[in-house]
Length: 276
Length: 345
Ligand SMILES: Nc1ncnc2c1ncn2[C@@H]1O[C@H](COP(=O)(O)OP(=O)(O)OP(=O)(O)O)[C@@H](O)[C@H]1O
Ligand SMILES: [Mg+2]
Image: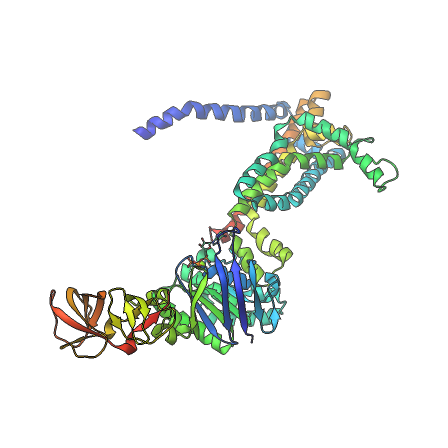
């Protein structure tokens, strides 16, 4: 009796969530369904275009690179944070989240200033005599990777710090006694125990980068479109809602498939460490 | 393979409280020494310093002729069994045990051979493919032992390696450890709470109290001639008679009674085991006789335990010979000189 009334009470909220989750999705699909001809053809044509292939490839490549960069930078940082005293650790964990509290547009304008032809970065390289003339970084794929990495580093670090604090420090000591130096310990003992945290962080960063709009728009310019910016261009600039929705659906499918695959991998690795 | 010397070790985690104070141990090549002591006395700390996991505040560690006080942990090549096992959760039993051999860059065949060998010795052959999370506490402990033994270390450090096994397995494993240690001629330190275990397995025992070694001796010497009040209490002595002076022939107790016993400097207490106190019929003129009254009686199976109130204080007496005595009976007790041991504080 109580259970049934509880379900009844939850029903409005449930229906609400359902509507607000799926209605926009359906709205995205509808334009492609409105085309009277068979809509499989729409997708095929889209995928056949070499321009579109480049955009899809660029989207995946940028997401992958960003994930790797964030992982390589985030892991040592997370280990360092996790190994501080509890008070310092909590403070650092908050500080690391700070970039996420600023507006995305402002954040990216900062990068435009830093990476531009006369920006701080080029100045620095010139002063160090590493280059003789300013190089182009802004409005390249590299700029998108840099901006995205900055955006998503906090997420990776937060995910990793959680995993690392749970790690039994004695396993590292045991490895050291058995002859493992610091590097061996990192790669043979610490990282293998962090698979869950690393994969969770990677999923979040990868999916986030792949679907982000502001950063590639502001730092990549018009010649380095990714799927998110392509959707905007199709819909808003060209008014082609059908094509925009095709891209959107491909983007959704890609993200879901990738997340699903990583999840599978995680489950497989997890069998080994049921709280040892 | 190597003599291990610990010289004047001091340790403080926070710079104020001294956890270890001027601790020295000298362990001969191939000897097994137990460190026995109550919880929190610094056993694990001592072991971790020897392993190189902690840096001592003061003091030296010497293996053979080599001073290793500043050698980093991964270069010391010791074997260690952790109190909490510290198995690698991401590796199978086989790979846990093989870890140290891989660090030593042995070839695959040798690794296979050595690991299988040690797994069979520790009774783990059937579990080689399992992961630590799929093992019982006792099995995990044996993996941790196998992992330390397989590298055939010159020094083996064991931190309560048997604390989680049941009584039968415990005895088996300790004999196995002893056998392997002697066979491979490892110098070993074995930390334990358990007196019986430490007496059974060791060449020598170091009894620790509050960061100091109270006595470092053979098990026999510790058992028969404890030197301090703490050691005597720890290994089960129950009668302690406080003394205030020595007149050249006998000790003077607090209650102004003279007791003859072996003369020794700094004596603060005399002790005697309950079964070494004799109940005698008539007070003869011999030394160390005291009158008392039974205030309690307990049946112990092969003897009776009497609690006797005397002018020396309350004494515990175990009696095998006489007919059962009852409460409030007056008795005469003899504390034979040879059984009365002087103790320092
Ligand atoms: N990391 C640490 N920081 C501060 N104090 C510590 C630390 N580790 C241990 N201690 C203290 O040092 C003392 C000795 O600890 P240790 O672990 O060596 O005891 P133990 O003899 O091994 O005890 P047990 O039999 O319970 O294992 C204890 O009082 C403990 O509280
Ligand atoms: Mg301990």
